[in-house]
View (cartoon, rainbow, N blue to C red):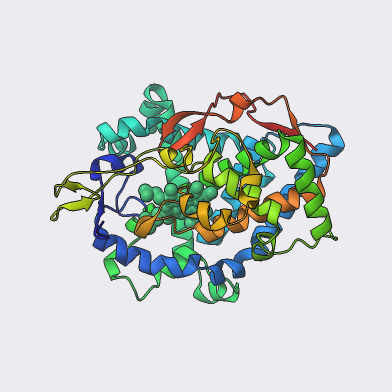
Length: 410
Ligand code: HEM
């Protein structure tokens, strides 16, 4: 297949303005934008940001310690999203959003995003809809479309973060010792001036925040469920972490953690088949040339796509695909054989740009949490709490306002 594939304008219109990297339609616009941003998500760049990931994880654990002392359950469905929002916001806007400080674990924040995702199939049919909502007086929206108002307010507050970062003093930004991604993009030599306007960068900021927090937050919740729901998995992982990390206050970095065989196996098992990033088909199209796939010729202009679910649940690749079996990754040659079938981060030129940051977060948070809270256990949680019930691009879990979702006790 050619790498000059555009994304489908119809399908991706649900992600809003196509001027951000993620929903960019044309392959050539995408190349330009990706070149400007990718260096800040390389392994080296992310390793420089790692102390902040650990610091926010430490703060997360402090809050869990308080819950432990008070005998309170922790609604990790929300708690993880607070953590992942705070991490990505610090990296792209250089600002502490402080969701981890919120008493209610940021339920309002999640509710606004959830509203956006729930509206997304409609936005795909009526792409002008959000523009119309933005143009309405607030009180009309409050009376007629309260969910849309949540979305508009959320966008306005994220736009403000972009405005702040763009007007930040260069000396202060540079003194941080780690990049502030949106500021760097705004000063990038790789982009023409019109790509660096406030109007484009606010959409970029909004999109990266969304791309970076929901996926990683949901994966952390999946990991937690898969580990705690199986006593043998939990016990074996706990022992490996205790042996490998003698001091719970000195957590190794991601590159060391991923060398722990069982932790690595649990991670890959979760990512390969349980925490499937996108459920949708992610359609692509070549405008001018036909494409060949095996014996098929796909005419120019035909949109094609496939959900990663077909790979993850293929019994010829993953035997007994519905079982959570980290051990499959410990078999001889399993890594070489199975790794190419991890589709969770997408593949090719449009694959996830944030994969290194995602891995840093996943390994750091799970290792720190389990090492510090050996008695962690599920609380009033069943399999239904972690099963996707809707395809809003990603597979989304059951969510009812006022309900806690997956919970743990420390
Ligand atoms: C477990 C966590 C994550 C998963 C499962 C995930 C999954 C994905 C997938 C499947 C795609 C491709 C979508 C498509 O083809 O349309 C993608 C793209 C993207 N992801 Fe992630 N992602 C994760 C974490 C992150 C993080 C932490 C960031 C923060 C920067 C991020 C930012 C992006 C961006 C900007 C794109 C668009 C890339 C492009 O078009 O060049 N993701 N992600």
